[in-house]
Length: 187
Image (tube, rainbow, N blue to C red; front, side, top):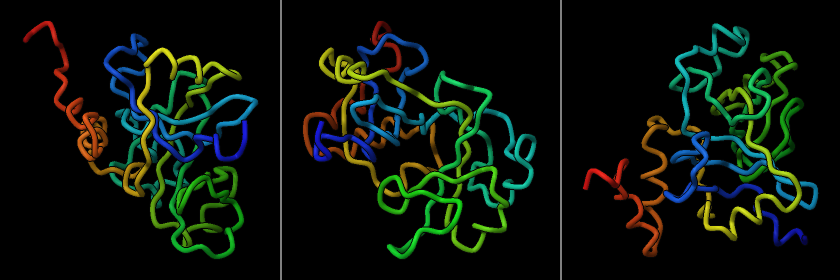
């Protein structure tokens, strides 16, 4: 795989054909995609757990809704932080750029180290992971649409509507999928 083949920073949008309940109507931001596999977080599955209940030091910096998101079915007892750092300057300590202004936050670092640099922060419990070639197989099976991410996707104020809004903005017949019913058997 060449760097141009990498899907890092792009969105995986679950197709209606994807049968895995962990990814029903999921929108996944790919954080890493290379020959060693793929890793991402589901952007549209907020939990009822407040950030303050789990990671109190980071609660003040968390965006709205200020809850933990279920990032995927893998390692639910671990946390990943994604934050926006505006500008293209030097990366602040405790933050690694993934794509554009979005990057991973070292949640073991003191929050005050990054507080002045962060524009938004979202915390995810767990992640979605694929072994080498596994994601490519799922793409070939039609399980995912691959689309460009936009800066607001990670920090959407209405994450439960993200699946529809990401599809609706596409400039192709893919936009029609935004109207796909939750339960097609009821039509």
